[in-house]
Image (cartoon, rainbow over all chains, first blue to last red; front, side, top):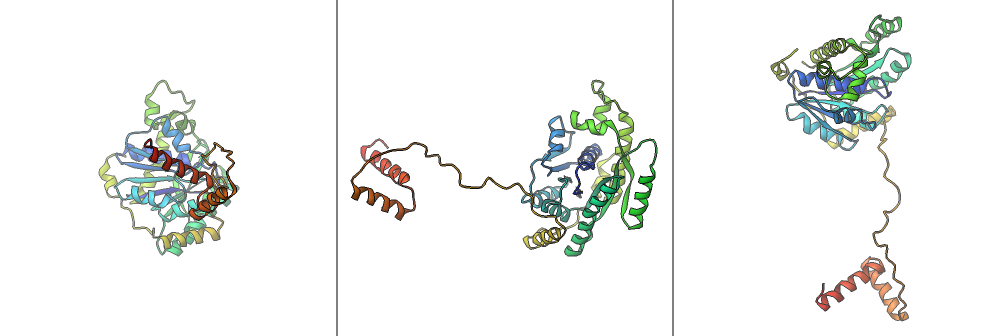
Length: 222
Length: 95
């Protein structure tokens, strides 16, 4: 089963949010999902400590020395593997990319995110060349506006596509429910069905966004 | 979107994972500034669990012999005294 790696040397772009959404949505589809938390901030471990969806297994504190064997062990047992990386340019990141069936580079629609995120894209291409195999990769824009597609976002999407970079659509919209998954754990469906959880946002819209995003990722894994 | 049968069609591709291939990936990464940033272990030697200190005065030739034997065995004088103590206890039938 495939290995999906979230990579960007910039912090705060939405790597962990993408990882949680993919893990929980693929688990909802019936997959056994192994999640590797390679981020020293332990965002995924914090999420898991509040409760993990059925079908998701977490490995915490996966470092540079362990990342390849841990992915290898999880990859062989019929699971989808989701790897959440630290937001720095490190050997851990380059090693994880080498094991990917799909590298997702989340970025906000800003010049800074695009510039730093492009480092990850360049690294993927150089690893493809060095290893002699294709490493499918795509950008997903994150924290976009629910109401309007900004000019900056349109320009960035155009630039990425002109550069031959695959852009996942839909982008991930800025939703309170996505952030609050880390406070409540579990998945968006559980959040929507629990009247005790107050998110201050539209969980149904967040769920629809997460489902479409996961479907778009699924299409790239076939 | 539901049904694990859809997921059954997803396949992993074989990936490079030999130490030579990992080294190649490290080199490619290092050239772009993706270097080893693992937290370093605390430098220096670990504190010894031997915290109790004896202050015996012995005859110079005995002291010299103990120091030489410890050096020959590659242990500290404290460890040598521990060995001697264990042998003493064995001899006493209490070890």
